[in-house]
Length: 360
Image (tube, rainbow, N blue to C red):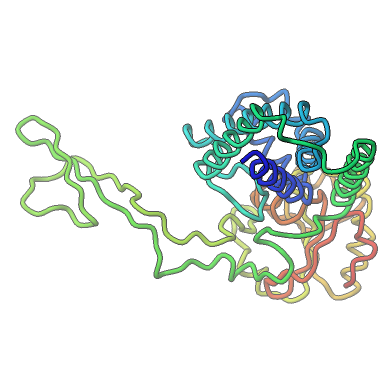
């Protein structure tokens, strides 16, 4: 039983850590959401979301490897126990109070609703507790002298992966906006699987309130109702892309822009948080893209006055449109970043570090 727990927990921690290590910036966005005033009220931790995310995902992988090879078993199992208690609290809080819709446990690769995440953490807690009280059955797999070098190599490897994906883009893209996706198709709803609603009709009968529920029309045989309230009974199909729009001065340009060929999109979800070095590179990129026949535009959640100020400061010029900040963070893990579109299909994405080598 202990060996089963050891391998199950170890492999799951390594898998979960590597999935998030592929996209530590995405995990930092999830931590930032947890730290926000609307969830845990730990706003002082929000500036530390990225370093904390990197530390947690690397520590998760390293702990999984330490458990499998039997290195420093007391430290390993105590760390696993404390970590899983912390995450169980977070997932329970998210589920019980409906605060965060996806815990980010397996990144975008395997999205879990809060209740599923909570059950997963409860199971892991049970398995880790079993190991906690039976540590004597966990023995090293290799010679003790070699174990520390294995952990050293794993740690260096994890830091190298984290550095690479932060300086470029995630190695594997599990998001709805990956290369090859047509955005309009991704936004299409399924007419055969709509939301199902019930309608609660409120009446005052003999001085008492009475509620009658129907699927639509008011019930027959009742006097004039006081009010009616729709109630969601069953959630229908939710398209993978459901929060994307391109607007300017209150006008929607989404369909128009997604119908065009050769569109180069500069994405800066928040101009005040954009990398200066990346903004300086935009002028040369815009000139190169326009010379190659691309129409260049920018998407941001920042105000038009901020956009004008940034363009003046960094010496580039383009038309800024407004798009939801969360959608822009999901599209590309770079601020600024580049996305190339052809009739709404994403044909390329680039971190600002790689703008010069982006083929047009």
